[in-house]
Image 1 (cartoon, rainbow, N blue to C red):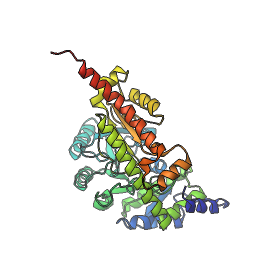
Image 2: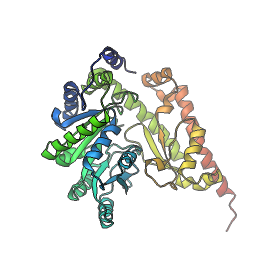
Image 3: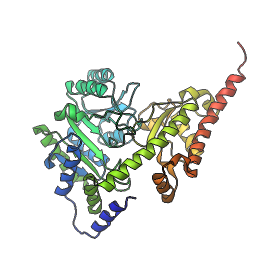
Image 4: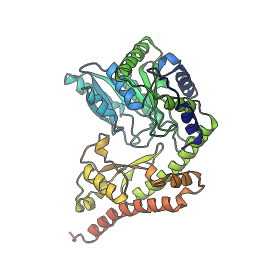
Length: 397
């Protein structure tokens, strides 16, 4: 825990007032500064804050997608996107992503999906995407993003850009990240969950930036109505911490940069272990996880009773002693042997171990990190060894 954040939260813990729905002026001003520093200028009356990105996405979906409207998302996508649309009774259609990255649908697949949905009597209105993606930990190239956003807006879709992980680029000087709101500012709403890079996961707070248009003003008002109906206010201490973090004082930025460096190192090591075992995985570029495809190991996995993503999740969770959600939780086919592996559990099981990992100039050499990576390599290598044995004993043809 960053001591300065804890102090801000503790100082506000004795306040008896409540935050207004959508956030107090100081918080909205801080959010404006945060986005303006990233090339997305805005004003407070185009910002809304809520207790986490799920609450904001639920409100945005309810405001944008009326009864009978359909929602489009990439395949795979963040595990929490589709359930909120279905909770509102909206149909969700997954659109394939290209080979080089996740988070942003292939533009041609997007156009074909829109055409098919409309031909079947549907009404696609909203596309949710992510340039710094969960679950694939990749960053969409600007040219792909431009083509997809152009295709979506040409079809009359409003875009919600989840930019929770935009501040966690593993190689910030080598990776170009653009927001769709920089390309088509009138058709894009940006959502950022502060638990991604600024606040602890247990302090739910998120902010949304709406287009500076008459339609954006109406959307902002409708979202506030939904948040009011839900009673979705930030807790005052959390709002105070969010305001402090969004201002990005040196303690916050230094901790964020150190955390990103640590997760980048561990993610690269985990990626090497996964690939060495014969699985497929895009090199992680952002966030705190990687997405592995164990399709090349299907035969040895089948020998262990693994036939789909749920079986794979059960096996790896038991073997690794940490959650290893299967790809079906992110919209991938159940039969695809894909899994998301988080880097956080590899950093230690206690606050002391995690703090040591953060402070160490060589975190991969710490015993608890090294043991966790060895466990991952052993789990993956066991499947590869089974495959080699099967090939070695295969009868000649």
